[in-house]
Image (cartoon, rainbow, N blue to C red; front, side, top):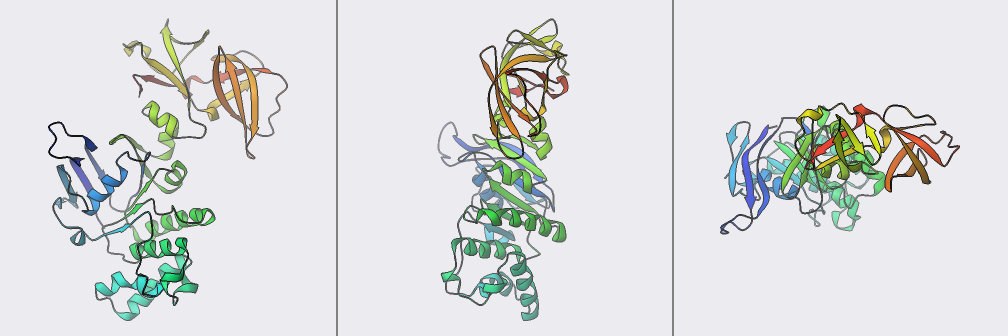
Length: 357
């Protein structure tokens, strides 16, 4: 087990350039021992580069990497005691499933009884018990990936298990079960798990802390609740949530926000605002409907509704602006127009794309 710490770590794949083109812009961050983390962001944002620096597959062009306060920046991968699971299966086709899972333990001279116990335990978790004696070559793609995952989990002494989009080839019905199992493993063995994904649902259902990345830099680190309710940038606001946060250009007048022809109160100190580049956002989940005007009410026309089974998504319009609203299925709509209540404590104000606290 290990606490992993990056101090001013950055990486450019072209280190001879006069001005570095960073794949990963310099930053400092720590991952606590036994934590469950997700690196979340679009393809090419630097997630895999960060993971490969942790494992030692890449030596950063800048900064220092520590495991338990020990500088391991130049330490080779095999000496870091890291388990890494890649996007696609990496297995030994000539071995049985049992021998594939047992291989890391055999290399470390575990006894036969210890190997049997641990392999059977991991096989049970990953639903591989019935194929332990089969050759790995003939298995399905998702079974092979489960073997790769199992080899990372079979060792209790690893500093961390690093997973790079590990469930890409896994059957959708099995993905949820595996994320739940990974959380159980983290809780039982206090194993540090770091999970790379571009899928917000995977990140938010797996991790205690999510690190959101964009264009080679970290834009927010926090819990699912923090990312959803208080996205630190408009990028996070758009990237997290389905649908994305409603965001509009706005201005300030007499200590109120001006949105189209409507004025809104907000729980943010507007005296500190210096810029005219302002946007206001609110989640579709946090908008209430009313047949009467109240504080922060906007009169809107309902253009359409979509039934998603557990909720109805309304598309509404005001002042030529479109806004999404989630309502309960049992909620009755009796008119083509309605007042949308944008509670002041649910509004997020952004100046130059960054959240104002």
